[in-house]
Length: 305
Image (cartoon, rainbow, N blue to C red; front, top):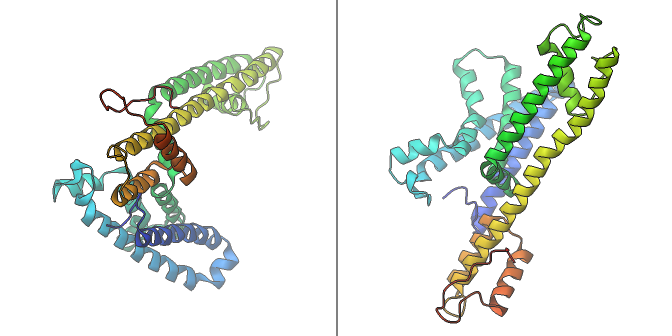
């Protein structure tokens, strides 16, 4: 099956690395083609490479669609409904967007520059091969409520500070702080501590509010950072715990067979653990078995140690 995330087969790895190289080269080609003299001098080369890339990514998409029924997820096992469900999955939509601009340009009159720029969407295909992206998605799902709460607080602060700034500065600078939506731009750049300087309060109350908003912005940035850092730490702990349980199951017979070792290697790749981390967990499981001496059941560590 094409696209063997979490597989150790050398051929699967070779295909993955080839596709990763294709994505990186496509993004590089989009960037270089935006340089006018390079586009004029090497236009045919860029066009030929784009055609080759579309062929490769189209073939990849069709193969993934055909083999979707072989995925472990039972939702995709039905020959027709399973493939339709796969087509609306996030990564499948990204794969489709990687080639869709090219085919749309054949039937719909589109700006060529827009088609070229849309090719940069292919960079999202790297999410399939990037464990960091996988962890990021898992953290976002895990911390949905916390992230939503932080965004809501930031929205309230944004509206409140921009409304007050409009109240304080509108009379003094009617063309700068003309309305609340315009003042929101000032609030955004101040809360994010960017401070472009294109909108500056001049009244005493406006300057006082500006200083308080800047100080408040430091805390606003720290809130999502803390949530994401906590989520990343928890996600890494869960992945290590999942691998520890897989090792414990493999050791139930007292020794790890070649087939079990291959499965553990695939589990390690799927969970994004390094070889050193996996070796440490395996060594700990061998030297300190996680089985109850009375019933032989698996002991779960609550502290993740």
